[in-house]
Amino acid sequence: MNTAAGNTGTGRWEERGAERAAEAAQIRSLAHPLATADHLEPLVRLAAPARFVCLGEASHGTQEYYHWRALLSRRLIEEYGFTWIGVEGDWPDCWRINRWVRGESGQDMDARRLLAGFERWPTWMWANYEVAEFLTWLREWNMRLPEHQRTGFYGLDVYSLWDSLREIFAWLEANASEALPAALQAWHCFIPFREDPQRYALSNRLVPQSCEADVVTLLAEVRRQALGRMQDDPAAFDAIQNAIVATNAERYYRTMVRGDQQSWNIRDHHMSDTIDRISRHHGPGSKGLVWAHNTHVGDARATDMSHDGMVNIGQLVRQRHPNEVVLAGFASFAGSVTAAESWGSPEWVMEVPAAVHGSHEDLLNEALGEPSVLVFGADRSGPWLGSWRGHRAIGVVYNPHRERGNYVPTRMGDRYDALFWHPRTEALRPLHHEYQPGEPELETEPTGF
Image 1 (tube, helix red, strand yellow):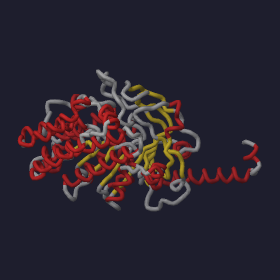
Image 2 (image 1 turned 120 degrees about the horizontal axis):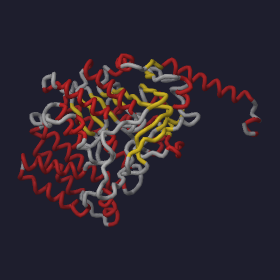
Image 3 (image 1 turned 120 degrees about the vertical axis):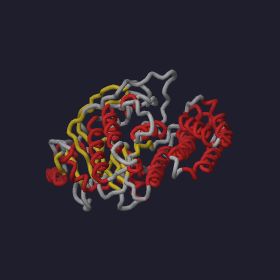
Image 4 (image 1 turned 45 degrees about the vertical axis):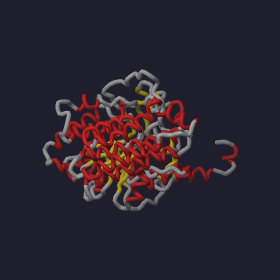
């Protein structure tokens, strides 16, 4: 204790100890043991009536987060009719998965071979053993059902500018060749940048002549050609979404180079809008699951993100669909994680040090000695649910030696409706190591943080 603190007497420190004890007591009152899928029952009961259940993760490289997210998703699909999953992944890659799990294409492949098609770094986010196991189960589940009841798998993200343009070309060539000139005009605008988003963004900053008008024209043309076909042709829905991705990706990359927070908002608005489009595509009674990082899933208004004008999926979905949303986050105290030392570099298994003193993770570890699921209930008052503490967020790029920079000030009771807790976790197992690109992989934005 330093001298200044000591002058306040012991009463203040005893009060702080009492406050911490009260927070730990509330944590224990909310916690349920978590060892088998049956132990998910309290969270299943909370999530079952919801229209949207958003499931986070405190890193993109932790085995337990993927495992329990998949187990909860399986129960909600099997028992309560959830019929779509939207993930923090690229639309074209996930559309191929969607067609596979619904029995529409690629049936000669298994899930591991299918996931080998993920080539954009970081591939381990989706090309891993936990996802392969879940997709294998999902395809088997779907094949027992009529086509209209099968569960879809979709990408929510905005990064796939060039892949989406290629998919648009293929659809127009097969279905509306008279619209190809609009696609060619957009493609020719991007050709000088050799599929490099930073090169495009920097060029636009130096010489303000963007491809925005070309992709907006292309979107209008694709909508004109495809809107009337969507009900009977899922490929038309795919074409429209790819055109929207191309339009928003152009704006995202052009904004990203300025280094402000607006690119984050463009991305999360895009993902939230995509959630709404998928929901409409599956019908007014459909129920969906969202898989993304805690920084996207946990309501931004309960973090310091709101001070910078940043929004996220959790906030936007709650605002758009009041009383129809459940948000669940993940947290752990220590262990290991699959991550990279820099953007585009190979993945490594890294040690995750014990959480910093005073963080939510530190308090959870003191209160709970075993994996647990905490369900918050309607009353979010109380010493822990209402307190502001740091909440760890590990991105795809991670430096364990700079641990204090990985905590987001959070009021847990307003950020989530439930929390998965693991005292110790293990690194996610990729299906393959990262590909070595012919040119350096240039950073778009650290996914999830």
